[in-house]
Image (cartoon, rainbow, N blue to C red):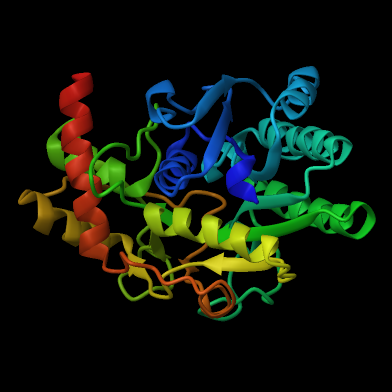
Length: 332
């Protein structure tokens, strides 16, 4: 059914959205990419049909659903920088919550049945147990995680009242790039761990900043669970197919179920790049939990999702090859 209709990807010109869009098109689906290009890149939206638009342009959303037979919405249009959300919560609540309400309103009016929502492990906050499953208490410690939790609650009510069929995917740390090198991770300014390490090891920035080396972890640095972006993309498609087949499970963690400290990631980058990463130790940042490791048994069991790129070295290798290619192309 979906292959006869369009799949709409809000934020589809961004890092994760572009990889989903690429995979959907390779599988024969028709896609619409709806992105305001604030953080997305026009050259990342080379598959499907691109519409430059904003979630606050409600008339444009209405026309889109009128003009195109959309069967599924994959909603990835959000601001997603934890530290920025602490400094500017208004930006995050306005865009991530109010913008989503505009989208959901247009979906309900147009009777679009299916939603796949890009959520985050940041909704859990400081973990009471590791690894964390979907039933763990949600106590976010930054406005980014709080804004995503608000949307999860809104989706629950839209399911109850309006019959919206939705799957919520809580990502852990997205990383890596398309193994064929067509697209990858590109942020301006860059804030994500692995690209910043690649900037530092390449000499593009003077050093990598470790924000806190006194956490209650084995080496004092934060521990994170890295999941390859292509595996995240595959999970979106399997969640869509699951909903269309009548599935009713609502929330899934997407994780590799193993954690690496910042220092361990640094060592892996140095091994792959063959150079030393210059490092500077700074104090902790507000909003950063010490450990985030997920348990994704539910997605593996219910969605039949099997991550292909679980090894940290493989994830970093794809990121490194994309980094070299992209920086050569852009002259950055």
